[in-house]
Image (cartoon, rainbow, N blue to C red; front, side):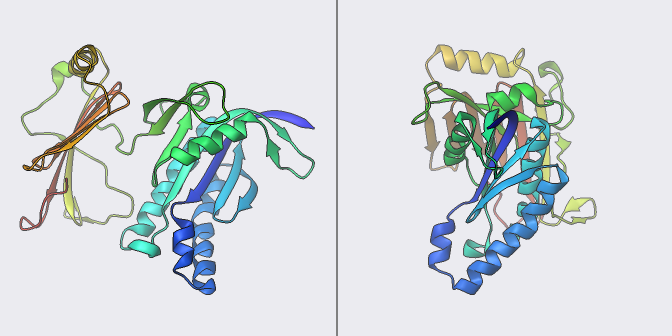
Length: 286
């Protein structure tokens, strides 16, 4: 049996079993057809080889770790555009997990081994709309092409060692600044348009998004993370008070939402994101 080192991707539709329980056979067929129509061309574009289809899931291999992650990002972007005006069972929300390692390849092209098992375990914790990947991918990919954030170590059933897990950052870095150069007066660099949104007068159809990024752990972000770690405050916390302020701390990440601003702090730096609705009568996204 042939053995090779490959990047392995596993995808599946979140809540597919529940969706099918509420759909006719023809509706299920249409859902899977649309899923394939959106996903398969992206896999082909990034030179992925589909090993097998398991209902709503794809098992895919790539020669390049970078191609695998970029493929995952592109799939989620295509689905984001598709889901824009859809709700509930009409949406297609996919979880994507990617790992790299040695696999055994059977005569029929199927793949086996610990690397495949680990990919399956990562997929089980991945969130819909996200791309999760392992340290083996992180170390072998081109980091300049993929903004990422460390989630932390996870222990999976049947896997002897803990696995370090990462995810693709959904906000691309915008005009990186040092901590000393950061402007916290409310002025910020504009963030790129979300996939599928049309621009009206230089603005997206529904909102203005402004974002400031402070990269690196040597400045303010480093001080915050180190201080909280030293004080024992880096345990999992999820708080929402009566004023609408939200604070979430998990796995070395801090996320605060207040007064229409989102502040995300991790080892890569600080991201401050302001969202303003064009219609002042609408509530700001939290």
